[in-house]
Length: 525
Image (tube, rainbow, N blue to C red; front, side, top):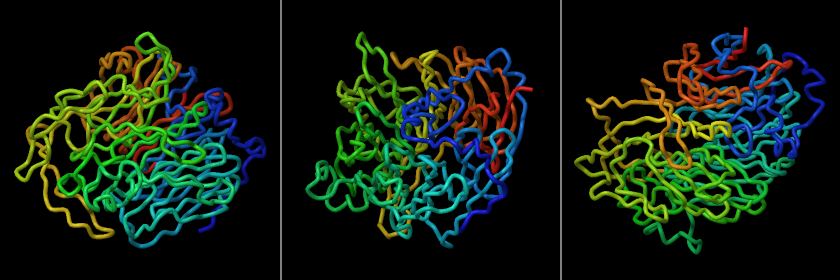
């Protein structure tokens, strides 16, 4: 459906394109938020410091933008040159004045009546390159929009949505490419990661996360289980331009809780893959949870940091994994450097010297039920972590709990759920949540701020010595980045299942967060 234009964008806001060079230099433009995670390194750290630990208590709501939707808004807005671009579920796009929330245009997409998605018809955001915005859709398309008007420039099919494929993650624009992952592991899809030409929409390459016959790793799937192996790529990855490597997390193998029908390690599920940005060829991989039977996929955000580790300067990757372990990897080679649990875990005796977990006996799901920590939602999940180069701490939202894992039959039917049973919560163990600050050199938890429900909110750290997060009850809060002390709190009235962003509008710093069905923006009085 074509866009509805409400106003004409100011010429000054459109004078400069978002070139690849600007994306490379995104950290030099802290007044903008130009990618899903703020920069290619995905640290989700803002260098803005107008709002700081001394004045954050004076934050006030500046504007809110309500959207008509029954889904929780999970978008992370892009903000470029005073204009905010965001998505409304399932697949509408808005351009707003970042200073006051005034809408300029919106694009509304028509969708098929029935779409198979696991966890709601959500969309987590956009990518931008040049004068184009890029959005994946729940009917498994990739769409390019003119950022001045919202008009459709091209629209290509990524996969067959009737078989359970969908696109819910924000794409990543790299060079002349748009990198996009696929959702639908709960429907027995075969996962992949794609690159499309930003100008034409032509597919440039595809990497299958479940290798077929003759491909390396195919032998890790018994029989023909690879055909329905899952391993989706449903959260945005990161990029190292010097190494020319794209890093992306992959989902769990399918069916989720019945590993008997897919014997083997099931590569490249529950892994991080490092692909050549130009060709999509696999350079290395690291599998966090071989033969995962607990739904502990690795669709978390790879955080890239250059730092000294154990006496040597290295190009590092920090990863808070759903399986309850925090990892440090060498991002040039994939070498395992460290793994340490950050919440209670009862499934692994240890992580060996190569990074492979040594499982405890009888930790797999069973017909009678196996009690394991963490539960299926994991120690953390898809919500974004943050790394502050000032405190040198890694921040993430966590959930500490146990579940009984059951194994059952898993008949495959195209377009139907492909689970193999469902875990059960423990009635007398409600679980406990927190925002935790981890020292990535040791894996030790420096501090934790308690949460009283399972979190879905991403984390933002800032040069103002602040860490921002949120709760399912709608509380948007600021913590002291060094100590975890609460400094400010506002209640939005809606579930927060998105990451906050910070930017400048007319020289003033703002913070925006999606909550419930709205975007809330805060600034100093």
